[in-house]
Image 1 (cartoon, rainbow, N blue to C red):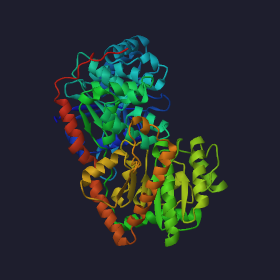
Image 2: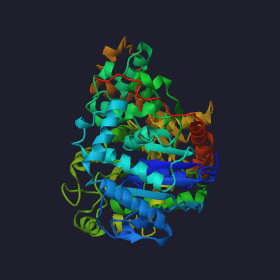
Image 3: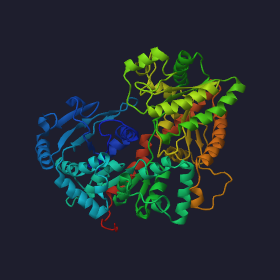
Length: 600
């Protein structure tokens, strides 16, 4: 790729990490291979809030060079400022422009991509309505069905001024690739395709397929049903609407379905490819490249791992009065797709084995569905009723979803003698966020380095970086077969096996033969529950066999895990997957022609 290559990333995480896309961007902008190949990177997104000071506008480690919201103009960017003002006057939109610095603390690699934010809240209707008209005429997107939803409306409004602003800063060239990270960037990618003056190249970066997530989470058979249905549907030549009905009322579906107009689609996992092919027949002719996510690959010694594990053991001892032999962990968001009940099912079998072996364990489950709680609230709860061992419903402790899950934790702990679960419903894993009973030198990385087993038995997981974060540190990573990272592991290992990763297949129907899709659609929670119980028992037995029993075995797990993680790093992803895909995109002569579909 040439030095003048510009990659524009359209994302809701332009100024801060909210979820998986933020982790991906961190990987991009601290990868030497990416930085060597891409001359200019620009993050584009909506300005979500005008509150706070100018220093907070672009997040941490940032510099604001222009902001009509704050009246800031850096004299070096006077030419940009003049163009920005014209755009703001035409659209009645504010613009914030600057740079944000990404740093990899382990390697020291850092970069400062540009950031362009548009305040879309009070925009004039005229230009936006004209754009929505084009969206319907050329791509069949019926904005009137969704514009009452701000999650749709803000990204539709973002598109026209974003493209105009890219032109203003000299980023509208034939060597510019506009990347839509998920549905949020699709209106801007479509605006790039529609622009007659520029030869933008466009990429839809599929971090998931929103339609499929909704179907899986909403059906009692979940992944057990869905991935068997999709396999049969491919054989029968059927697509989503044929099997699950019309999805057009779902705005994310409409935007993702239009991704077939992009020059290239990057999918973060093998199942994401299958899901896109199931979305509509048009995806059969689109180039879909698998671009896995990278994972951390930092080398540590056995001594370092044991030091981190000892902190976790001491924390358990401070909370529960015993020092566990093994530490299980799960760091995740508290959402249905993460399949947290499967952790408990596996642990029940392990606990029974531990009773006969005289072994003990603890599961530190870090998960919450609210923002980080203030330290004063944590210390007050710890003092009042021994948080996080005990919880109380309502603020500042358990939210509704957390309370529902904590009921399951209480049931497990009441029945289990040799393994207990500590539910830490708080972001961060250090004393100032988690209280005085935590060892004073505890850091977040300790829960990654010191973990013996990390769970990640999701029902829907397009990739799953978090599940593999303990891999390089010798942890056993237990993931479901539908996780995209399982495909990457198998791609790297080829025919070789490993003790460091256990893949659980909850889509295995065992001996039952389902003759057609109608029968597969009848798979319900009872059928899935029986399969989960059987699979969980097998997974538990594998975990017990693989748990290291000596320092030499721990050393072997660290070495094997690091070698595997090293071949799954962001630099490997760049060289083997992403950069070849971008190179192919840049060499395409033109974007896919429009007006090829018939719409109602």
